[in-house]
Length: 290
Image 1 (spheres, rainbow, N blue to C red):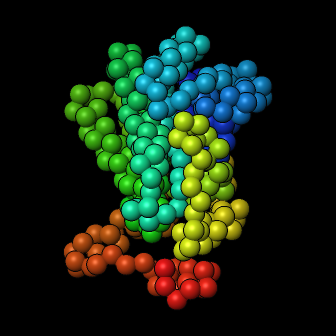
Image 2: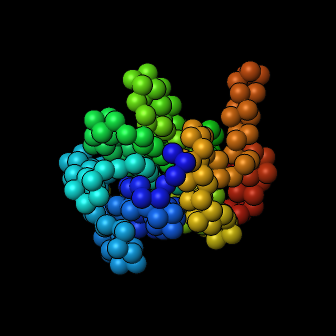
Image 3: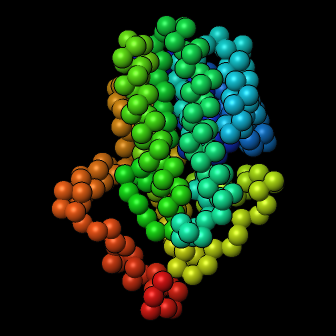
């Protein structure tokens, strides 16, 4: 899809971060955009900036909400050409055995089932249209790695990568003119660590993070303000759409992570925390162990 002007995009998680940047980049490319999020104030502010943006409240964990989003997109703009399944949360930092059942449910309901719900709502419509389209699923460098204290998040992003690879094969097998990309960014200056603001009330507040897990969270807090700008990630996404690329690496170093894992598999290397990170967490906690 070389020419994006006049096309219609749909972006979930559009109220902030990468999602917001995607909406604004699409508008700059003369696209029309449906901005979807549970944060109604955030997407309404986006819609106020351009008549080419329609704000639609959508909770991707609710299949019926995703269906309503699809209906609204077709009703407002007559079709969809670029679908960005971008909504995601990182959740609580803690060892996997200390993650509450609700922590698992929330992350997987947003990061994994949210993608599944959107695909169920949009792909049949895209297939019936028979026009060129592109689906972008936001994963992460976490799709290729495992890191202490964010295991639930990494597991969910591994799932997004597998879903995306499978979707691409299935659409190609059907001869559909629909391409798929999986976005795998590294660190981006967003509010991802503040995702608990959208945690459903029925789950109750997130438990406090302690010890080395809290130290890792604090490191992320310090590093993200200096990380890549969401606008640069959005530019990489639309470039990937134009070039029909499956893997979209806004951070070139992320492309090497699959090779690192393949080497570990080939050598039967036991997973261990990077010694530099381990030493830093010990130093930050003032403890000789985790």
